[in-house]
Length: 441
Image (tube, rainbow, N blue to C red; front, top):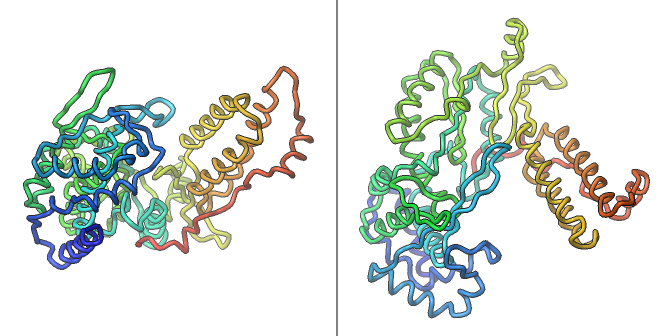
């Protein structure tokens, strides 16, 4: 049963690619017992619980019975997702990002729906979209930006930020977009019920006609579908043909940059994009969205105009114009100041909380893993200096909190250096060679 569903998904994917205008009329039956069991096994086993308080292990104790009951309720259209449990995580130094934690059963159904949608829409998504897609990553998106600016005559960049995208995505437009490809009323009803499930905050159920909570498996693919129609197709079919010169865009989820050769094209894109988003109930952040001059002539122009050369942020990196050892133009990048401060603060808070909670040998492997995780994301070509700086900050913080486990200082720098020889912390290293990384999967 399980393999049959996977085979059907593969056939759906092939047909979607072969027939761009094909509308799928029978999808809900794919969410059968075997497929949902596989979705259950693919969930994170130690993730936080939703409003039901049921963990992955508890649900699995009677898995066959639970899945059988779930499928029966879905077939009878009695299944309704529970409101998500709203929690907040730090977004930057001044704000927090809201997340919605679905109930375990809802996570299973979301994952199943997301896999069906992925089988259909992967054939439609354009090459400039990189977020939450199989065999694509944020580092490939950065590589695409690097290659475009470094090899083409790009002179202007629009750094864009959609204000509260996940909280303001229109349910009405979302369902209209889904109906372009999907004509199965049962499947569409499931998606609509997830959109309307709402969330619980301070003991109250809050339901809106817009937004989708981040935290589940469904919101990433829905956001890609929404922006595929609102932004990607519009840019490809309307903006590019009307441009005087080269213009392009790279998008990772709701984070994207537009690049153009001529200033009039960049200005036209900026104004048209704001109007485009307003039409669909969205807004570009007035302070975080800006058009700047940028490219191989930026340093020369900045020097002549007696100003600092422009930079822009994308996916946690600040991009700036530099030169290679041969004096050629080079697009450089470093960890953005905001992200760097946030990572240092997070490490400081964790060290403070853990220093006396258990012995050093117990939390030392976790510290090593945190450093490797930092290098795994930020270890990208030309970012060595920021990596070394983070490593030095980490050493200072570790020494600081080791010496604050009691009123007596237990480590000097010399003794700490000896300790590091026996129990080393991972030193900075480059993980992603941006020039060897293909911008496409």
